[in-house]
Amino acid sequence: MKLINVRRGQFVYYENKLHKVYSVNPFLRNSIHIARLNDFEQELVKAKEINYYRPKHLDSFICNGQRFTLDKDKRAGVGDYILVINPRPDSLDHHHLHAIELVSSLEDNGVISNKSNGIKHNEYWVMLPGLLEGATKIDHQFSEEEEEEIAHVLADDPVIQPEDPLPKIGDIFQQNDSDPLFQGVVIAIEGRTIHLGGNIVVPAEELVDTDKWTFVLNVYQP
Image (cartoon, rainbow, N blue to C red; front, top):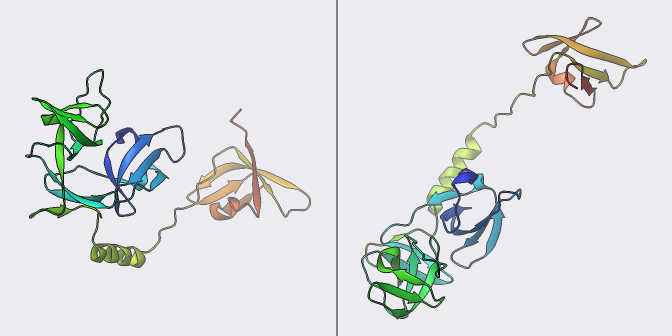
């Protein structure tokens, strides 16, 4: 995922387990605060480490040690847990996407949660206890067999090392083991062969080896 697409409350997978985004702080290196649903253990992660998941009717997951199944067609009763799917809070309410709330009382057009939020019937799905018939477990993104297959494929794939970046025209390098001291400026680049002033020709891999050469500056940059 890209950071700009991450929102508070989203269901995501991290390390193959279902989590919910707790908060997003783009100014931190690990910008996303997530909580694992089955026990609410928290982590700070990067956007590229998580995968988004949109809950569906009859999805089943463990929340705080208890299994629930989502039912989009059932009206909630007092004592039911609900998952906010389509939040439309007014100025006095504070529920958000995928907030999990306990119903404390009923109204004609919705429910009042234990957090004093008024939530309309079209804003939530009921979290029914247990695994209902036809339900799909979503606690893990991949089954154990799929995880083993993915790990096997990754282990068999060759590791491709990126090539070292090429120096630029005007870069000055100092040779670390020269006596007397030698500095040369890059005057030409031919493929990965670098030409320095003084008729010195070196491969790019050697020139970016910090044990052999040290970059000093570029004559064209202030």
